[in-house]
Structure formats: structure tokens, C-alpha cells
Length: 145
Image 1 (cartoon, rainbow, N blue to C red):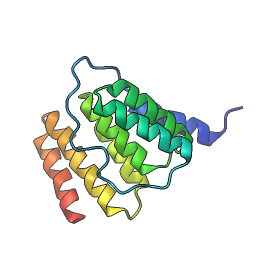
Image 2: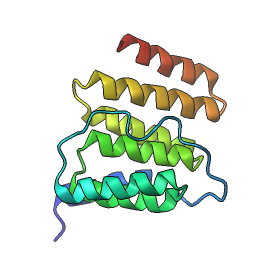
Image 3: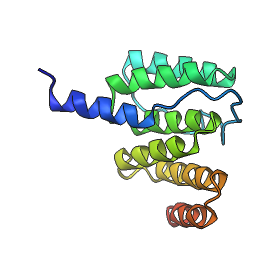
Image 4: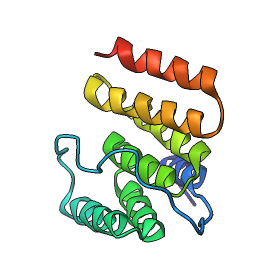
């Protein structure tokens, strides 16, 4: 019998799953701009692997590492943000926005993280041609300064 938290975690991961894109774009900002968050050693290792893969342009591998980390710590907002950045690099802008919003939902009072998420949401919306939505996201980011 599957417990509800496991089903919820799997549903959240499925929401950020995306197909591979042949021409990945550059990440919107460096992956290590935020202060460290206390993760388990396994999650810290997966984050390190994901960052190395992303820097080498292996976004599929980076995303897979972050998804494994999210199975361990599904409420870690920094993991969701890093996955959002990977999805943005893969030009999967809808998934990038979704993961950044998920990060915001777990970010609590971390205004720095929420600010970065709103900027990424704005970039994702702009990339999809939603200038009005991008402006609204930037306005949300500015309110956090």
C-alpha cells in the first residue's frame, strides 16, 4: 500500500518531468548563487553532481540527479529552484515556471530565494511570449527587495 506522502511526492516530480530537448539554452543565472541549505549528505552529493552536469551542458543528467534528490527531500525549495533552472536551460519554460512556483510554495520567509524564483518565472514567461505575465512576475520580485 502506497502512503499519501509518497504519492504526493511522485506527483510533484511528475509535474516537473520534461522531455529532452536537442538544443539546450544557457541557464538564466549561475546555479550556486544562493547560500547553502542544510541537506542530507546524499542530497548534497546529488546537488553537486547536478551542478557539474549542468555546467557541462548535460541538463538531462542534472535534472535526473535533482529529481532523485527531491525523492529524498521533496519539500526542499532550493532543489525545486535548481530543477527549475535546469528546465529553463532545456528550454522547457513551462516546467521551469512550475518548478520555480513549487520552490516558492516551500520557501517560507526566504525572500532571497523567492526573489530569484520570481525572476526565473519572469524569464520563463518572457521566453514563452507572455510579456504581461513576465511583468507581473517582475513586480512580485520587486516587492521582495
